[in-house]
Image (cartoon, rainbow, N blue to C red; front, side):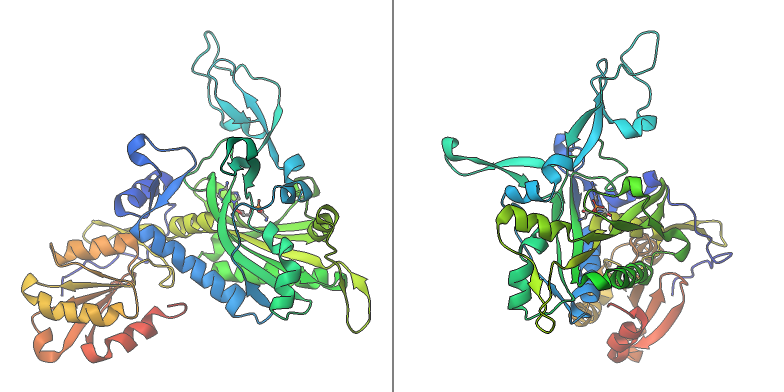
Length: 451
Ligand code: GAP
């Protein structure tokens, strides 16, 4: 097969430069600006053919780990727009805001707690300092109108977090799914926040996805379950391939706790722009169920069948940002390796379970396409496969390395006689000759967990 230069050393991880990542993501169809041909729209992003596969893989692994592997957790899918009173009860109407200032000269808007990032004012003479207004609180919820006729419309909000419906539906889901305390409800869905300063690629967006789970337990068990879910969630991020030395738990200081949280621990990842939160684990206490009982008039407390004790369950929440975790996975994986011949190989070292394409089929010549297509068709039943027959084989390998494809299968002129193909592994670039009949089993073993 193509003679690839071996790496001079096991590749040392290089910090993934955001600029390189952003341009690779756009060029290769992972993630790019929404509404690109109109100049983009700040804080909104589109996922291309590779991006949507990566994101779907992450969501499927989360669902598997959080719902299917726990008999005491069930999944639901609820509407994005819900009764506006929910957001009064939850505290979002009064409390979900960031401190904001405007510059009177350049008209830019900044978060008052992030003025270090404001940069110089381009519009003032004799000084580069911004001419800032007083601090105002800016509510982050996006409003919309529902109802067809102008005089009967009603203001509503696009949900700023997916979890409120898990509280609202708590009693119905518990009864329908015949669950007893403790148990959890999970969902994945879109959330919207009118962030004052969206930034760092998809890290702070105005439209994003959350994967949240609310675990309802007896007050005497809240510490136990908090610790259980904290450890589970950290392990999940390790299992999907985030490097141990780039993830950590960081407990919140009392002064940074959200209005609903009694205790909170973040899962943080070391992005090229610093350590930042990708998931929050919160002890929300009985805040939400008590508030919704008060505002809806429907009692969400329970009576223990055995002891007849009436109590409001405590809630432990795990809240993962899907887009932030995708970004962490991409930053974690992007590597540049100098080969023996001095060439630099860009390689996305994604865990196979996360990789958008699992196998690429690369016939050595177009003359072999008919047979190579048969191999391609047999693998498509199992995984997302990419077929590429144009160009030099070395360059085709590089293109797959760049998007993180764990295995390339080359069909060559000997394949017709020996019924074997060459399987090349992305990270080691090792090549194995494998019988076509045994290819699915070989790849299943090699791809491993989650595939
Ligand atoms: N229900 C709790 C809740 O929403 P949060 O800490 O505000 O808690 C949870 O959000 C996760 O959602 C964060 O850890 C982050 O990954 C993601 N997230 C929050 N705001 C985001 C934004 N503007 N853009 C992208 N992801 C965001």
